[in-house]
Length: 327
Image 1 (cartoon, helix red, strand yellow):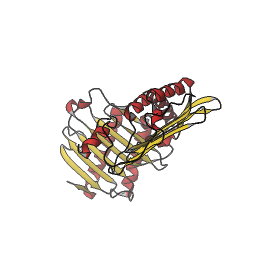
Image 2: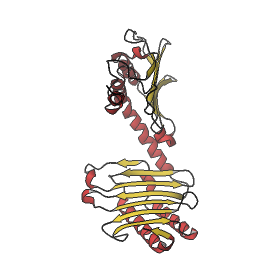
Image 3: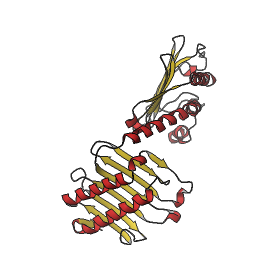
Image 4: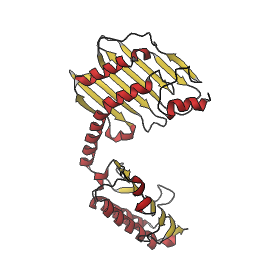
């Protein structure tokens, strides 16, 4: 079997490592193995961490005792602005995690520490458990996984993800309630139609002069000719300082007028997504805050904001076409 086939067997379809031998390049300790005995004293604490290839999708789940209460904690680099999210949960969550430890015979993993020197990309994990008798279990791997890894993680996430989702929703609501304190200084806005929604395509990159190569980057393909001339147009260049100030002030007005803070973290897919307009909104502020939203499902005030934004950019590019490349 080729190395690429081995890798696909693990990463491509989410299955566990094969039972017919090690993957090429795997090195390290396999842990206690099938003969290991389960700890019968019960679970005291738990921590699982996933380490993604580029770090952007790293996350961790943790369960611990705090003043006699059972506390669940979640951290994610994808939601780094939320910090550590945590809440008290029923002791039954720890009991359920212990049952998974037994049913998947995780005792066999204790001491697992392996990596694959032939894989330059990929992901990894670490797992730590402490038990009521004071003993512990630890396992970690980089592009190497113990037997039963995929099925265990799937069951573990099925148990803990609903609690994680509650924490994310609570953190999102709290973030929206705080609002935005700064002024817009960056905007990436895209509207891309497909299927019955049309064939128009609008892509905008707007920055403050000096923070990017040019402060206005616009790519448009318009079949309707409503906001820009029909056909394909390209605007790339620097508009004057005064016009830049007016542009960002106008975007700020739209942010406030349509309550775009309520779009914070919005991501949704319409059931008929092949016939819907996909949008992306990434706004940066001089306070280092941001608003990010995307999807084929559209948030409140979407149509009104879209029309006003396209009218604004159509007007700006028409007024300053002389100082922009127009291919």
